[in-house]
Structures are given as structure tokens and as C-alpha cells.
View 1 (spheres, rainbow, N blue to C red):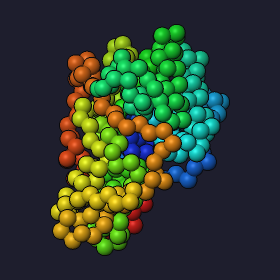
View 2: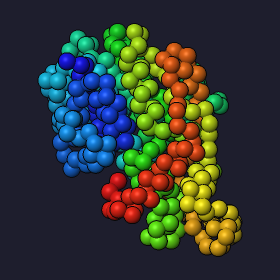
View 3: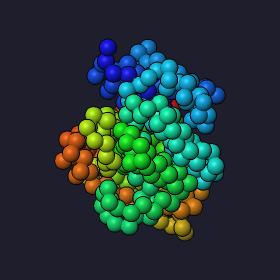
Length: 344
């Protein structure tokens, strides 16, 4: 029998891709979902792996529940991908975000410790912990300065993982993943909002896409590449935290331009009375409208990761580049809009 893995947040983008990877490596995969949630297994179905996943209910807000699940499964590896992961929502729900993204991590680590530290632990950290960046590009030694309740909560989880590793000798590590997208990304995220919006415009289902800060810059990679880094981290003899990134940065504006180019539309920008529009160069029709309501109370303007350590020590490099990622997302959404309905 192969190894046994428990993945929290298995119904999300990363959970689906990681499950697929582990199943292909012969793992027995258990996926934890909240008992109160209506379970959306669409991503697992889309990858054709739902029937191979053992779904269990586990709530990160209740330690006794976490303990029962881990005692029953006895996983070799635990990947904590569960989170309230939408930055904007964290400003509206800071206490809930802290409860899951921060204290939830402590609960899992404490259960692992009390059970003798047998399970290896991966914590999904995030580039949002850098927030108001102190140096560029960001590497493992860059100081953190989170700019949202999400970033602050994730930073707590990150340092708690380090602390349990150093205090209790647990094989625990954090992957500080920069933005990673895919056709399985939720529509509340700006990249997927753009790819789906472009597809809907192409198919006559929508007139215009409303976006917030066009000048925010991110280091965007492909989620399917990034989950491989998670697995590689837990295969190392000594646990260590790694930056996972492409080393390239692109603005939301550039992402939108690239997405429209997939349907052969060139965008030109028109600023007028504080309103910025992205217009079709050929027809002059407005296709993108800037809505300042989407701007965050505190913005993270520029993220750029340096994954040199991951390349040198665990042999990880991204395979899918920015242009290929955008094209993949738009083409998949064009198919979805044709076939309908788009459910995530």
C-alpha cells in the first residue's frame, strides 16, 4: 500500500490538482471538507478523480474533530490547504478569517504533536504575507509586512509552523506560494473573472468586465506546477520553507490585455474624468470598466518571487509560462460558456 495523505481544502483549485498528483504517485488520498458546507466537488469531477478520493468531514475550528479524523486516518502526510482565501472577504470577515487561517493551523499542529509527530505537515503560506514589500524580488529572507487580515492570519500560521518544527522537531514546512491560477480558479479571483468575462463577451453573453486596481502587479504561475512543489517539500529529509514563484511580474492590466488577445481583440485604454475604460481598438466599444469599489482598503501593489532556493534544493521550476497560462484559462472558459452552465 502506498502512502496515505490527508488534504484539507480538497475541493479548491490546489486541492484538486494536488489530489491528482498524489493519486498518480500511488497515494491513498483523503479529502477533508467542512461538515457545514454544501460540498462542491466539481473540480475533482472535472479532473476525473472524485471517485478515487475518500471524503471526510473536518472542521478547523474544532480540535476534537481534527483529532478524531487524524487518529482514524493516520496519514503519512497532511497538506493544509483549507483557508478563507479571498483577500477582499478578509476585510469584511476578519475574525472568521483569523479563526480558520491562523488558529486552525495551530489546532492541526497541536494534534500532530500530541500524536507523536508522525505525520509530515505542509502549510499553504502565501506571498500576501509580504504585502507592503520591503525588498524586490522577495525571497525566504525578505521581511514580512502583510496588508490584509488574510495576510496577517496566514503569517500567524506560517510562524506557528516554524515554531512547531523547531520546538517539537515535527516535519513541518511552509510553501510561500505566489499567485497561482488555472482553469479551476474560483470566479471571485481577478484572473478567472477576466478569463470568464472574456469568454462571455466572445460568446455574446456579456457586454463589459468591471475590474478594480489595474496596476496591481503579481507573479502569476500555474497551480498544477505549484502543487508539485508542495509534494517535493514533504519528501525532503529536513523540513524547510520555500518561496514558489515564476520570477516574473505582470499587472492586472496586462493580464486583461493578454486574455482579450486570445479572442483576437486588441485593447486600448481611455482615461476620462477619473473613469478608465478598456476599449476594443477596432470597434471603439468599451469592454473593461474600472470600478473603484473593487479596490482594497490597503493594497499590495507589487509582488515578485525569487524561487532560486527551491530550484537548487528541491529541483522545482515552473513549466507553464504566463502567456500559456492566460491562454489555457480563456480557452477553457470559452468551452464552458458554450456548454454551460459555468459553476465555479
